[in-house]
Image 1 (cartoon, rainbow, N blue to C red):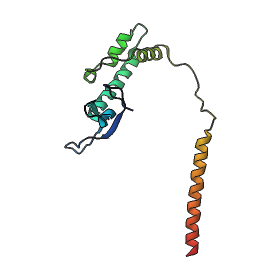
Image 2 (image 1 turned 30 degrees about the vertical axis):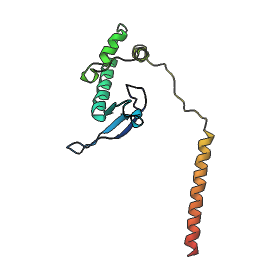
Image 3 (image 1 turned 90 degrees about the horizontal axis):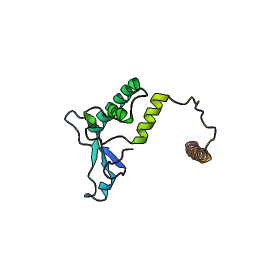
Image 4 (image 1 turned 180 degrees about the vertical axis):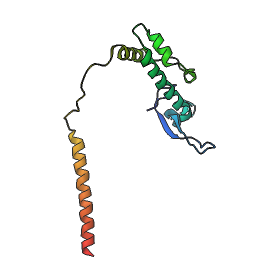
Length: 148
């Protein structure tokens, strides 16, 4: 989910206008815009968002390969926000930087992931009801075919 940086509400996705080459990127518009045109007019398109994401991932990989214990949180933030895609970025949340530092410097805990054995009964009941309805539909169709 994409959130508006101006008013912290969820954005709605839709298609932007087609480009000369036929490409029609997604456009994410602030949800408050639908209710009050003057309240928030923020929007972003894939054309802006995709380079931002790819640049961040690239910086993240570079950080992973170069980080050492002596790096400060400011150093990490500087490495992650390197590039023209981040000119308007004020910074990264401190908690996120601390977690990134901890994982890269100290590693992950050696924990084996086990799939929980608990089966949600409401999901199972819903699936069973859907299968029963489908069975009734086919039985009714079969009766019609046999009656001809």
